[in-house]
Amino acid sequence: MLRKRVNIKEISASYRNTNVTEIWALIGILALTAVMKDNHLSTDELFDASFSGTRYVSVMSKERFEFLLRCLRMDDKSLRATLRQDDAFLPVRKVWDIFIDQCRLNYTPGTNLTVDEQLLGFRGRCPFRMYIPNKPNKYGIKFPMLCDAATKYMVNAIPYIGKSTKTNGLPLGEFYVKELTKTVHGSNRNITCDNWFTSVPLAKTLLKSPYNLTMVGTIRSNKREIPEALKNTRSRPVGSSIFCFDGPLTLVSYKPKSSKMVYLLSSCDEDGVVDNTNGKPDIILFYNQTKGGVDSFDQMCSSMSTNRKTNRWPMTVFYGMLNMSFVNSYIIYCHNKLSRKEKPLSRKNFIKKISTELTTPWMQQRLEAPTLKRSVRENIMNVIQNEPQPVPEDVPEQPEPKKRRNCGYCSYKKGGKQIHSA
Image 1 (cartoon, one colour):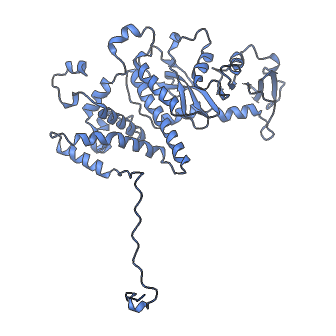
Image 2: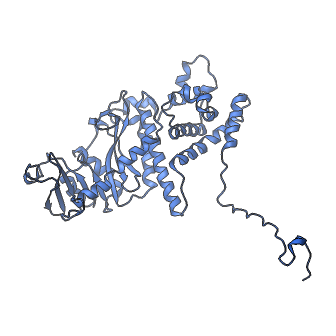
Image 3: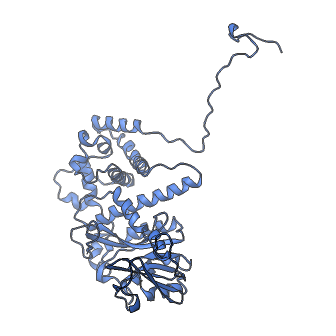
């Protein structure tokens, strides 16, 4: 902020220093843009009361909002030149590590986990920007990710920083699977992944100590471990399956179409069982049930997103962290509510409540400023008065007063108001 203020001729209140309460309010605004689908709007439209209402302008002005986003940094810029050669992710590394540690500490994953990749859309300058044509955004920053297959909770994620990734001589897929599953080593959980991660040496390694993990995943047809007898042949009927066994490993070759062959590897010591209803092997059915953890998590992040147009990739990662934290916190909230046999809020109302709790303290602090415009003061008062006041959980509810009833001994004609002796 000091560097930005040097080039400003007239320094107003919009360019003053900030505090923790205001930063929470900034995140509250971003949360509200996500739930109201306003993240694609420009700041002029966002802070236009006739277009977007008075909620945004009550929290802060348009100039203040732009200035905070422009000054937002997650590292010391003066140290980048000396440290960035060792870590290309340095501008976000410190905050990212804190965020991932919190994701690990606040949740115990289930039996089945999914390893896949998420792509944060970004088309600006970034040393490790990726191009993945089968993704909706196609260009962006890739994050190999570990999610719970049942609840879709994001347990761990590592940014892919290109050729500078230190894999200690391991293939990329094997390196990321071992790094992502560090917190569950020795727990006998199952890992489901696609053909970018799956390999026969990795499946054998994970069965041994200290990993003690099983794996189910698709495998590419060019792997030399696949026998020629399992390869695609025109003589094989559609819907046929061939199994191959190597100790605890099971490899299945399934032909869903005349011109397509699917290969799946499992280290769960399974038998060659085929479902009688649809003719598919049980390995494929299990893979289809547990493969969508990361894809569903990515879809939830995209449906209510805080992403705003930016030419700085650290801001793209920052918006991505907010989206991930909203999804993870909602999963924990639903689990806690259901464990107490209470009905949870919808995700839309949950994020609205988060936005309200983050912005209200800052709006109350703004009211204390004697130079605040009357129109802004009225907007803040209207917003705060319309907010539902939370009821303390430790205060018991007061019972309703009992209505006065007529005497049962008297006639209804006398009104039941006579006094009877005992």
